[in-house]
Amino acid sequence: MFRSPRRGAAVPEATFLELRGLTKHFAVPRPLLARVVSRAPPAVVRAVESVTLTLRAGETLGVVGESGCGKTTLGRLLVGLEVPSKGEIRLRGQLLEGGAHQRPRALQRRIQMVFQDPYASLDPRWRVRDIITEPVVGELSAAARRERAVQLLRQVGLSEADLEKHPHQFSGGQRQRLAIARTLCAEPELVVCDEPTSALDVSVQAQVLNLLKETQARLGLSLVFISHDLAVVSHVSTSVAVMYLGRVVESAPRAVLFSAPAHPYTRALLETIPDVRRPGRRRAAIPGEVPSALAPPPGCAFHPRCPLAEPRCRVERPELRPLGDGTLVACHVVGERAPAEPGHGPDEVSET
Ligand SMILES: Nc1ncnc2c1ncn2[C@@H]1O[C@H](COP(=O)(O)OP(=O)(O)OP(=O)(O)O)[C@@H](O)[C@H]1O
Ligand code: SF4
Ligand SMILES: [Mg+2]
Image 1 (cartoon, rainbow, N blue to C red):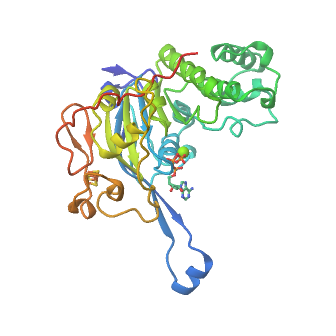
Image 2: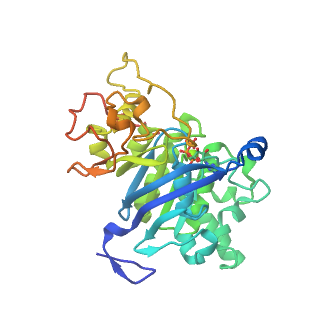
Image 3: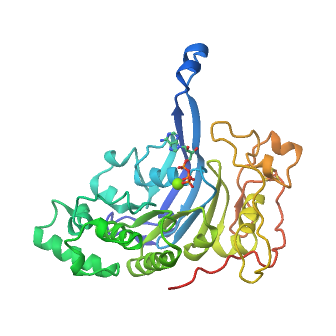
């Protein structure tokens, strides 16, 4: 049992973060002519559809999938930047209702987000000391804020000399360190990292990932780590959820997912990762394109690209079901574990 320091209630550790049927639909207006001629209602993008997941305290849930599958929307729902159309988010059993503005400030602070683009997420007019202590404005004196800023800068590998600088004086990797410092200032329990390294040079990606991992271990943070890159997800995650067109198609403990992927889409994603053990091997691209989220295929949305598709896959949507090894998979065909092919595991991200 874990006793929450903030809430005082004893709840099972497994319920640190719980998503139940979490759904987000966006209404997209049709072009003016179509609206006038056909009086068509707005189209609906099913960005996130019935997502049910759990995360244990101190662990990292990797969320992976191709562009447009709903990863960012899922992250934005967690921090309250989007309001769910349906479903529940619970943190240590407490229901998070509505968006961030409807959540009490103390609750808002418990979940923070590091965004993909460190150039866009820091206000260029502000000085570093004000940027990174923004979460405690009005709570600490100027001197205490300065002291806090210095501590935070040191924690992320920057120095007191950086306090008076502006964001343009930093590289992309350093800016992401500043964004992480600002996040830590709020003393969150859960940090949602949305592709935090994908805008960075390869040479600094591993440094930022390692900073996140070290910080997590030191502070006991829980992370939701969003990436289209399975190699990166493998490096940081305890468990992984694979999304396709808004739905989770497979979730599993990291080691299980990488050694014995179950869903045909997960297997196809793994085939796209470079393998240092077989340098001459050509990496397979997933055939076909991701269908439009405005008109997902019926039945199993992956069926137009799936090598195992059967007639029923075109009409019946598979529900997630357990395979007995911690895996949940949404597939009609996969029932028994496919033998793992050697070389399925991704390269390790190099430590720098
Ligand atoms: N505010 C919005 N209004 C309408 N549609 C939206 C909105 N935000 C996202 N979408 C749509 O929802 C779907 C999921 O988008 P999302 O950004 O969550 O995907 P993603 O997995 O993060 O993609 P990427 O890897 O490109 O960042 C997409 O079809 C996107 O166009
Ligand atoms: S349900 Fe059918 S189409 Fe979908 S992943 Fe499984 S085999 Fe492929
Ligand atoms: Mg995204």
